[in-house]
Image 1 (cartoon, one colour):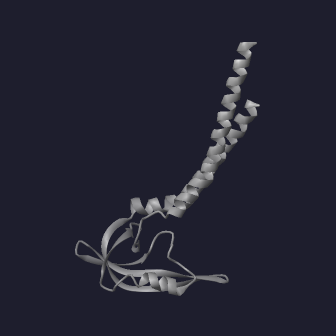
Image 2 (image 1 turned 120 degrees about the vertical axis):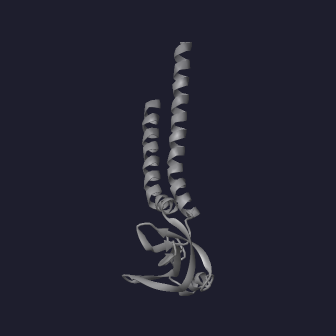
Image 3 (image 1 turned 135 degrees about the vertical axis):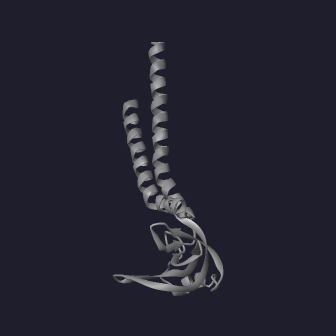
Length: 167
């Protein structure tokens, strides 16, 4: 019985690792790349707009903040999204416009410039809590199953060894 528990627990551990790696590279790694690679600058807001993106029969409005930033007395223009995951995008234009109303033309804001594409930036490098939860919960479940399985296998192994000693 303990051999089958070890087998199932090992399988569960591998499934946990598989899901963790997939979810990490889908939901956490892109934000960490932005956080670690993009450069922070003080940008000046020059315009705000919502862009309508269509795909098939659905569409979404995406907030765009136009900015200017300065490096060594040279000014550069960049279009900023709110985050790498486009959390503030919505099918409701009013929701996006409400988000954009928080930006005043001429106001300074921190932006993070893409080193590979200097005309693109994001306004936040935070990893959304939902992404962290997705990355943790499903692999965590399989890891818990593996832990219980290994614990039970160890218990049955110790019990079998104790029975051998008493006989």
